[in-house]
Amino acid sequence: MASQEKKRKALEGVRIIDLTIAYNGPFCTMNLADQGAEVIKIERTEVGDQTRTWPPFKDGGTGVNDSGYYAFLNRNKKGMTLDLQSAKGKEILKKLVATADVVVNNFKTGTMEKLGLGYETLKEINPRIIYASASGFGSYGPLSERPAYDIIAQALGGIMSITGYDGGPPVKVGVGLGDNFTGTYLSYGIALALFNREKTGVGQKVEVAMTDTIVSILEAAIVNYTMTGEMHGRVGNIDPYTAPFDMFKAKDGYIVMAAASQLLWEKLCNVMGRPDFIDNPELATTGLRVKNYFTIIKPAMVDWNAAHTIKELETMLYEAGIPHAPVLDVDQVVNHPNTKAREMVVEVDHPVIGKMKIPGVPVKLSATPGGVDFPAPLLGQHNEEILESLGYSKEAIEEFRKDKVL
Image 1: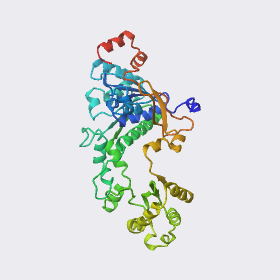
Image 2 (image 1 turned 90 degrees about the vertical axis):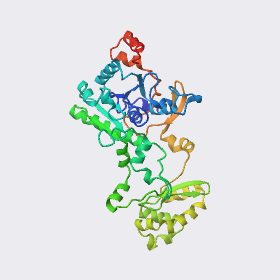
Image 3 (image 1 turned 180 degrees about the vertical axis):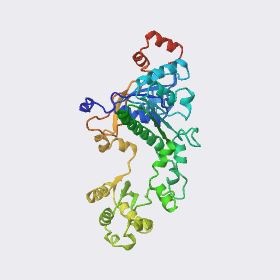
Image 4 (image 1 turned 60 degrees about the vertical axis):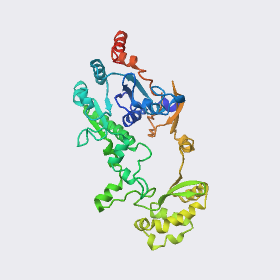
């Protein structure tokens, strides 16, 4: 890592004013901060971002500066408190916007406008500003003013209807998929707008809605419905469009495997000792294998997997070139050699929590690599530094404190 730390990062020189809370917005700005952007996170005075109260906490604490959740999402950022309801708070933010490249928020639609800090106002201050927002339903449409969290987007976006097992209730995906993808899309949109601004010199508005995000990742479910009028419903671990593609119980755990092409199917048949499946006319095509999966293929695969350990199965499948993986618990993921080799769990030294391990940076750039360089800020940690950079005196800053602007 030492050699990488000396390299310039891709977004160095980009200043981002981060007004986001909870998950999708902080996840977006975290990704940008990891790649070198200077992210100034603006939080409510005294209480800060709501995730400061979300566990886990250091030694049973109760929040503000000891939340592991907050620490993960806000590494590599500077922290500032500001009362945006006050005239002085608005004045300070506008001064920051004049120096910035990007402003990001994920408030309920209309909140920034009510504060007098909407895009039309901020672009008058800085025509180059990129104004990025994430919300549950977007800035227009019949549901635009509704609040949302991830589970709301997963429900309305349709992904819960296809998650779970046949005959069972709809199930939320195990992680905040709507939040994660929305934050990723928003960082992608910001990068696009920055690239366009290099050519035009003008900023623009970037918007991502969580429900739009979920609709965009429904994959073939939408195409299948619009082309055939059919909905596949909840199908557990299988893929409704190819087979075999499933999870199986071995002697000592669970393993998944996928043979989504004719070549892989034939290799799997040979590994299983079932070359007769290759010549079986009922299994000759992908469509036929999907149709006859539960009656012909799965029973044979269940028996074959149950007769072997995970290690035995991995050896056979690896030698045959068939995609597969054991189903790992989180502790196994954290300690897996591949996770370590890819630096996907990294250690930071937080001033309150101490040494802690958090997810690393998934986007690997060869010339300008990102990285986790410093921990999440304490509440208001960089107030004085940021205000002095805007030209405020120590006396003025002390007045802000007395007036509870900070």
